Length: 453
Length: 83
Image (cartoon, rainbow over all chains, first blue to last red; front, side):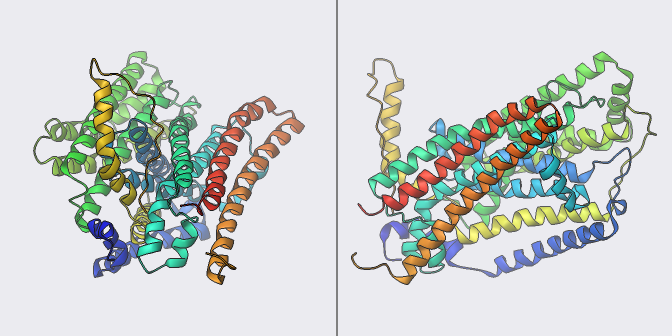
C-alpha cells in the first residue's frame, strides 16, 4: 500500500489485511457457544417447549427477555449514529459505524428469539397467512422489518466509499468489494447522491427506531396484566433501549480499541462524551423506574401489589435489587467524574448496565406472569439448560457476526476520518463563528463533501 | 475505457443487479403481505380499519426506503463515469 493516505490510516486496514491467532481462537470459543445453542434448539425442536422451564402461567421467560433486550440494544446504532450525524457532532466519526453494525446484527438475533419462542417454527406461516393487525405482535413484526431494512441501508450506504478503497488497494476479496462498491469512483455526482441519501435515512431512522421499541412495549402494555398496563411503558422502553444501546456501544468500542490497537482513533474523549450521555440516561432510567413503581404502589391495586412485593421482597428480590444496583447505583459512582480514567470508568459502568438492562427485561416479564390476574396458581420460573444454551448461542452468534464484519470491512469509517481532517476542521470553525454574536450567518452551504477514494 | 466490459466487470454488474432485484422483491413481498392482511380482515369483517390504518403508515415507509436504496443504486452506477 504505497499510497500515503492509505499508510496514514494503516491501522484501520490491519484487521482486514492480517489474520492473527486470536481471530481463530475467538472463532473456536464462539463456535462452542453457538454449538451449545444449536444443541439446545435441536432438543427443543425434537421434544417441544416442555423441555424448557416455560409453562403456564409463565409462558415467556428467557426467550422474550432476550428478544426485548436485543431489540433494545439495537438502538445503539442507528438512532445514536443518526442523532450525532444530524447534530453534526464531529466526535462521532470513529464510532458511528460500530454503532450501526451493532444495530443490524442484534436485530437479526432479536427477531430470531421469537422463532425460538414459538417452539414450532412452522407456526410462523400462520402469521403470514392469517395475521391480524389488531395484535401488537404484528405491529412489532412490521416495525422491526422496517427498522431492519432501514438500518441495513443506513449501515451500507456510508460503507460504500470505504468498500471502494478496499477494492482499489487491498488486493483480496476483490470481487466481493467490486460488487458492493456499486461502481463508486468518487465523482461529484456520486458524492451528492450518497450524501443526500444518508441525510434522508438519518432523518427517517429516528422515528422508525422510536416506533420499534414503543411497539415492543405495547406487546406488554396493551394487555391488562398487573404491572404491564402502563401508559409510560412506551417512553420507558425507548429510554431503556437507548440506555442499553449506548452501554453496548461503549463495550464494543473498548474491545475493538484494545484488540486492534485503535487507541489513536478511539480516544478517551469519545468515551467521556458517551459517558456523559450514559449518565443522563442513567438518571432518566431511574426517574422513569421510580415514576412507574410509585404509581403502581400508590394505586394499591391488589393484583398489582402482588407483583410489586414479589420484586421488592419476594422471590424476585435478587434480580430486582441487582438491576437497581447495576443500572443506577454502580454506574452513578463511575460516571459522575470522568475527567480521569474515562475509558475504564465508562467501560465498567457499561458492563454493569448491559447486565442490569437484561435483568430489567427479565423483571418486567417474569414476575408479572408469575402472579397473573387470572386465577392460575402462582408459579416461579426456572430456566433449564435449554434456555441457557439458546441464550449463550444467541450472544455467541451476535459476537460472531460482529467479528466477521470487522474481518471484512473497516469498523471505523475511513472516509469520514479523512473528511474530518480535510473538510471538518474548517467547517467547524466556520460553523462556530455563526454561533457567536455579531457574526453574520452565511448562506446555507451547498455541501458536496469530497469523499476521498 | 473503451471496448466491451471484461467478464469480471460483467459478473460484478450482474451481482449488483441481483442485489437490487432482491431488495425490490423483499419490499414488494412485504407490501403484498400487508395488502393480503387487509384483504383477509376485510373479507372476514375483522376490524379492517386497524389493518388499513397501519398500512397507511407502513407501506409508504417501506416504499420510501426502497426508493432511497434504488435511487442510490441507480445513481452510483450511472454517475461513476465522470470523475
